Every structure is written in structure tokens, then in C-alpha cells.
Image 1 (cartoon, rainbow, N blue to C red):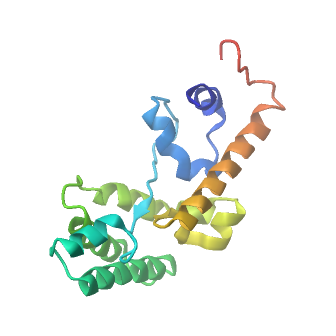
Image 2 (spheres, rainbow, N blue to C red; image 1 turned 90 degrees about the horizontal axis):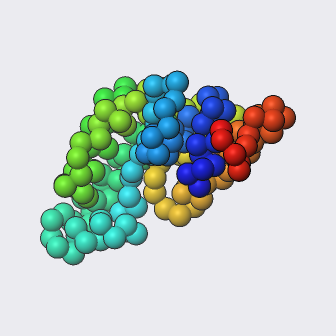
Length: 174
């Protein structure tokens, strides 16, 4: 997989790859684009093992967890309709995240970059066009599968650009 990503790095400069920037960075691939996007975690109150554990340990009530989850989801939808400012969304996300995973390092600025960039609006894949902001929400399996289909689309587009140019060498120097 590392080889494939390294070989495709020169072609990964389109607006379709906005949601996939982090994987290339982890592998040390330098990108011309400086904007990186991250998935936004909003665990499902009744299904997330962290949320369940927090309730079972008595750190929060089930109703409090459900309230914070609903507030986050509502803020995300309102943000996508341009009805609330980014800071209101970030406040909700941060409160829920700190309750669910208090040891996690702060992610506010990473989330701000993703929200302000709105990559779901510029992506050309059918999933981003249909589901909008829901694509960047890291949640249950169905959402994660959608993001996987988005990644497959991005890979396919990169492959289309690389092959006609005969610029892709899998078994020799890149």
C-alpha cells in the first residue's frame, strides 16, 4: 500500500482528494497542498463502547450523552446550511469529545480546518454530493463504509489520470 501511495502522490493534487490527505502525510509524502482534513468524531450514544463505558462507570448519564450527541449532530447540519458559525459547532464537538475521551489531545484546530474547508462541497464523487457534511462524520459502520467508497472513487480518479500519462511505474523507480 505504501508503494501505491508513493507512486500516486504526484497525481494526488485534485480537489477530489481533499478528504484523503492525512494518509499521505502519515507516510511522509510531501504534498503541494497545505490544507489537511480530518474526520469529525461524533460517537453514537447507544452504540459507542466509549459512551457505554462512560455511562456504566457513572461519569455521565445516558441522557446527558444522548443530549450532547444530538447537539453535535444538529450543529453539524445547521453549519452545513450556513445557519451557525464554526465556533458554535466546535464548542459542541469539543464538549462531547472531552466527555467521551478526556485523554484525547485537543483537536479543535484540526476540526476547524475541515469545517472551514467544507471539502464535501467541492468533491465530485456521488457520495459527497448526496450525503454532504455527513461524509466527514466518523460514526457508525455505514458512514465509515461511505467514506471507504469515497476513497475508492478518489483512487479511481487518480488511476485514470496516471495511466493515460504512462507516468506510473509499479516495479521500477518512480
